[in-house]
Amino acid sequence: MKQYITHNSSQTVALAERFAKTCRSGDVLAFFGNIGMGKTTFIKGLAHGLGITADVTSPTFSLVNEYRSADKVLYHFDMYRINTWDDLYSTGFFDYLETDAILAIEWSENIENALPDNTVCIWISPVDDDELQRVISIGTLEEYNENISA
Image 1 (cartoon, rainbow, N blue to C red):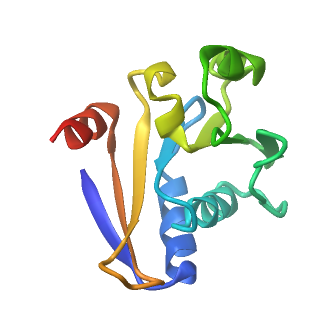
Image 2: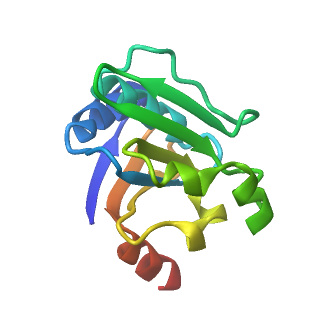
Image 3: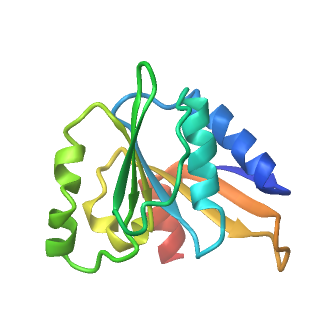
């Protein structure tokens, strides 16, 4: 697992832009972290790094937003309100997994049993009580499962 510390939202965006260069079509990115940790901020940087110029916003009410660049598609999910398998099916989530798009999923803890094995997990948490600094950890689903059971 790789860990990074960012000191403000601009640094989080810049890290995400660099991370975007490692993303490939079909990647599933699962985001974990409390409200206000910077998940959407990271995804804004990710989109920019993928060449997407659209204004990225949280899909809290729409559940999924679609963004396109010349050669990439990004689906941005918010699973905050997903509580059951029926809820998840109603989003069309499993159909999106069959595409070549990159999926960025906020509140992945709500659907962790549905995440594919090759999911890249991104945890965002505060540095101590600092309101701006974040620890951003990027790893595998296996590392995520080891982390939560420890």
